[in-house]
Length: 366
Ligand code: MRU
Image 1 (cartoon, rainbow, N blue to C red):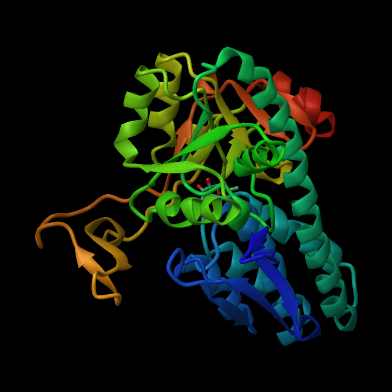
Image 2 (image 1 turned 120 degrees about the vertical axis):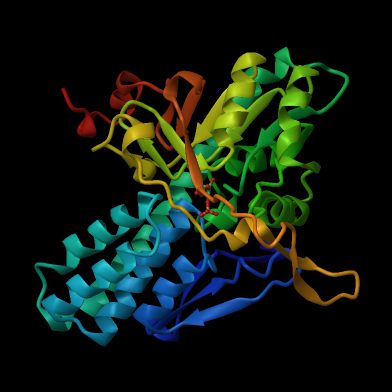
């Protein structure tokens, strides 16, 4: 997507693949800075410190981390070490394991001296594939928006609510939940986006708002608790979110707070869609609530908030009393029964085992 008129992806090769570059997402929306990652440990740190984040981009970064791992030690032991180090960075987004498995499957049969070049080619392919999958999600989501348009009031823009950041910053390009929004906006559909701020890390307020602003998409940032109120008053025509892991029966794990929005949408008859590329589907799991590992993050993310101060400096502000403990689960699971449809690169299906199996018969289990 464009930043100040220049096209960007979120991840790119540098020095002929001896390193790779990413956008530092901990600095947005106030500073647009890039970082060069040169070692396996730097790549792993970029994921765990959330310099990069979002399920598809975590996978793409892990693929590039394997490239750096092969630069450092292409032996069998080096391959297993790189896989292990990267897999340990974040537990919930299954795209991480998917990308690592894809790269390892290519490298394992090769002699050590062929692994670096092969890892580069595979990492490039994973990134290019991610762009294509997300653009297809955009087209398939645009068709849903066109279907819903006639049912929405004519005296105002079509109103879409989204949670967290499932835009191009969370992927290599386009985004998942935001791809249909970009496609619809570019097609001239009059729309407006409600952006949940998404406490505690504020990916909505910081990243989604920055993206939409850069693309000129009309939007309003909401306190996380406001969405249900707007739904009750007929001001939300559709919800679209992304996913970090969706099970074979259609349970959707996404950023903490997604479940509450799905409950509110269900209660108010608002269609609740999930945009996800197939590497986000965990075909080994069924019951998302019981089976998906949920990342528990630092209490400090709840107790404190980072931002731009009135002085123009950046800083942390403490919100809670010193003695208060804080809970910080990074994700929650929305049961399939609350999901209107899953928008994938192959089309949109009901959030059911049969729906997913019809789109991806090669993964269907009896
Ligand atoms: O903790 P994050 O910022 O990595 O969480 C991101 C999300 O929850 C996104 O909604 C999800 O990864 C889908 S991204 C296309």
